Image (tube, rainbow, N blue to C red; front, top):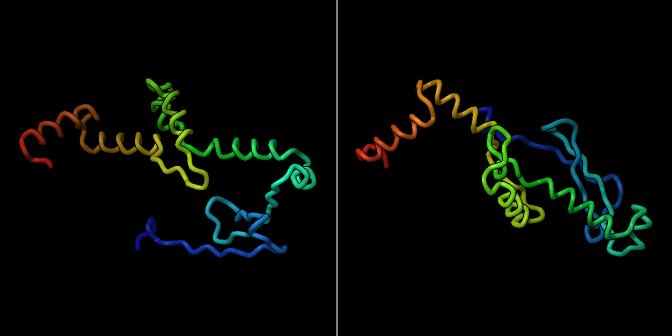
Amino acid sequence: MSEKTEKREIVYHAPVIDYNNKTQLTTAIGYGRKPDEKYEIVWDVPSTDEECQARYDCELRVLIEAGVRQFSTRPNYQDVGFDEDGNLKPDGHLEMQKLADGYKVGQRQVGVSQKATVQKVKKAEAELDMSLDEMVKKMAELKAQGLLD
């Protein structure tokens, strides 16, 4: 296995306090970007204003709004809304709204970053000594000749 495809093993440490999965949730915390160890931290999930007030000192509605705001930053709006120069794409604002409307709680949004794509294009341009437009034109010619599927 190469370094890039090598599977990392992460050690998870159980919560240090009693945990009830019906009224609480855990989050795994580690040090740094790719920790080898993670520690389960317990968070209460209140279901009434009274429980929420007792634990978080706020109304349940405020806690829910905070949660929605937190996961509202999860989708990769940049890829659908902006070009590589940071300018709004045609219909970019609408595409960002569509992305938000399709968000599913608990699912990670997977996407290719624009920066990585731009780097790949620049590398290909340098290796082939031609622009992206020239590559596309050449590929179309090869396809028309039946040399590409």
